[in-house]
Amino acid sequence: MNNDDRELLNPETMLSIPLKKTDPVELYLPLRKLVASKYSESHAQKVESVLETLNKCRRDMVERRADLSLPMQRDCLIHYFKCLSMVEPLFTSISSDADPILFVWYDAFKPDHRDGVSSQLNGIQLEKAAVLFNLGAIYSQIAASCDRTTALGRHLAIEAFKVAANFFRKLLQFFAKHVVYATLDLTFLFAEFLHLLFSAQASELELHELLNKNDAGYAFQQHRCALAFISVYELHRRAYATIRNDSAARKHLRSFDRTWLTRLKQKVAFLYAEARQRESSILPQSERPHVCSRVESCALDHDAECVTEILVRGICSRKTQLYEIQTRMYVDLILSEYNPFKIMKDGKLVAYPWDMPPPYPTDSAILSSSLSSSSFLPLKKTELLNL
Image (tube, rainbow, N blue to C red):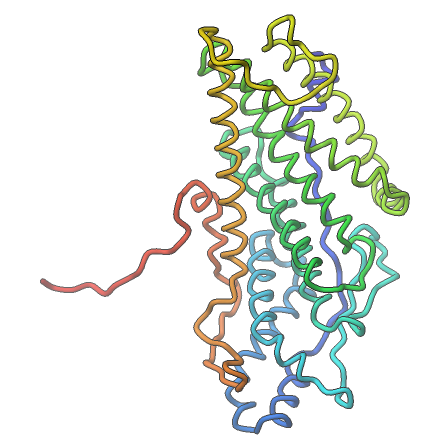
């Protein structure tokens, strides 16, 4: 591997994306007025704490972003998304003659953000989609900011890139359910591209870890590296193909940073050649392929190389599936709408006051420990008891 090749696999050169920007919106007064007119003044008083928290979350997200660390921005976004999910029925209750609540969002890849899009056509759905995008973006920035020269830093970066990827997977699922008229960055195509890109970068860092390890036999290590190169190549290839095949998206991304597509193209070419070479090196001469493809299992005989290949393929497959399932579970957990109250229940307005001021404590603070565990539920707490 020459110096140029090593540069392509340099863990210091990882891509991250900026957050979308939005205009300030007053939520407390119009929503309180809506509750008072649709239900009663007593109901409006019950939900005041909820609406104040919602308003504060959004104000911090818009106006205090520069003052908040990346983890605090992340927790603010998570908290705001949960609040949005709880008050969503109120937005659907706004009648046509009432004053509309409009959210305006700007393209993340246009720093001057002159051209925004309004939520007039799709209400609260644009707001929720934009918050999901920003959660993926903030995790990509957290991953890119980790000290990847250390084992711990690389581990945290890998897990954060995986969570970023799965937020964009969540966004894909959201788009499948709702029609969202938005800027180009907030489309199904860009969500798919970013999901593949951050999945690829997480896998690339794992590959870098693997190449630095010598804790297995030569044959075993050769198979693991070959399979890892094939997997990382495939993710990068799909990410590049997603953008390359759409002229508008390609032009849009180039206007943000011209080096992105060039770098992806070079990395795909390098990984293809490396994956093909390593795949060929673990097969018998007669079975070495002319084109790159996933390694097929050999017949189970007494060939030690063959047995190792079968074992490694099974281990790598199960490990990848486990990480993917765990990360999806983690994303579902931190966006869960479960909390001590619901603002609507059985079609009636109810509210149990809930106020959680900054720094917005959430379960996301235990990212690395939760992903390495088989359980994601917190332990129950109890009082001290003199027995």
